[in-house]
Length: 459
Ligand code: 4AD
Ligand code: MG
View 1 (cartoon, rainbow, N blue to C red):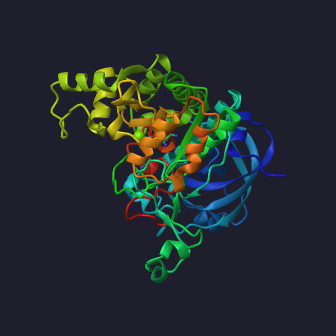
View 2 (cartoon, helix red, strand yellow):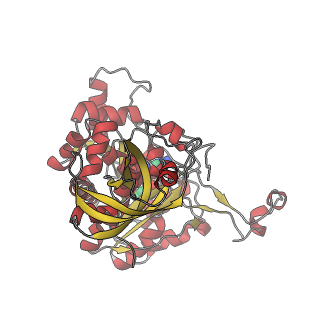
View 3 (cartoon, rainbow, N blue to C red):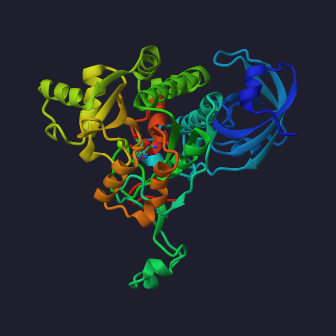
């Protein structure tokens, strides 16, 4: 049987019960002959207070080892706490040191550390309140994503991580090879390689999700995606997770509706289930966080066409680093200005110029825009990118030819339009950007356990 976790002990408060608690010492405070330990096992934000007195076996020796970072098993009786700050405390009867932590070298002493510093110690970073709280919120969100889709009749499809198709067509794929560099450099390098052709890590599971949407109707894929783009920003990772639903018999309107519903569902889940964590983030990371989250769940998202968005940006008189013109890809300064200054909340921008979007998006009747949508969030910028897909064989074949995609590589994708094609749509939600949104973390590197960015993959 596993021992109770501290979250469980603090929730049920089995006073007068003898129990064993396991955890790491966060702090020790001595008051005369008695020591007070704050014990954490990571199950919740709160610590369990342990009272250790001179009655314990070899107390003086023991006390020297009860330092910040050390791990212990405490056998004791839970009693009401006479002091402020906690309702119950554990009166220790026996303390076993499981692992010591040398106070001279243990990096996580009581003072607050910068997130930049913590990134240099990925092996210890989750033992801080803030990063442990992010990890718990992330796990909650993960489960909630699956619940959302399960409740709405979607099937999860595990799309491949190694793929031979570049969904976004942006050429940012990491190559996967089993060849030594000398052989790869030969003229027929990739032909000699493991798959007999060039393969890479997926940038999106969309194209394969479309295959299953054309069979099961409503599916989603949720997994890691990889992009070798050299963007050293607070919103980009080289390895990130994406939630990608794909729905047959669905147009852009339906796509926007389900994306908005998903975001509200997930934010609501965090507000309900992670209140202590949100409070911590509001205190130490971003005071505006609770109000911002309430605005997300409180009212429908605004909607603007790309053309309207450009008009509003031009009319704002704001000096942007990249001047705004119709036809340009919106930069994150524009995306944030739209949601933060013009709308004051989430906004869905739809119907973008065809020239700046990938080949698979459905061409509108005006022949110059596509049925695309991005959801822009205050503080984050783009959280979701999606579209209705081009279901017309001729139109898609022409766009693929324009994009330089070969029939022999993407014929399977065209086949979905050759046999029983239907209107369909989907989107991708960046999971780390969502974690950033609900934690207020300024940098995406704090939203994932092990961030991979240009020049950095420490473990
Ligand atoms: O807009 P993107 O590139 O869309 C696609 O990949 C589509 N195939 C999705 C689909 O329709 N199924 O990426 C979707 C989202 C972005 O809105 C952003 O939130 C996130 O993925 N994203 C990143 N997150 C972290 N680091 C990066 N480098 C990211 N690139 C995209
Ligand atoms: Mg996008």
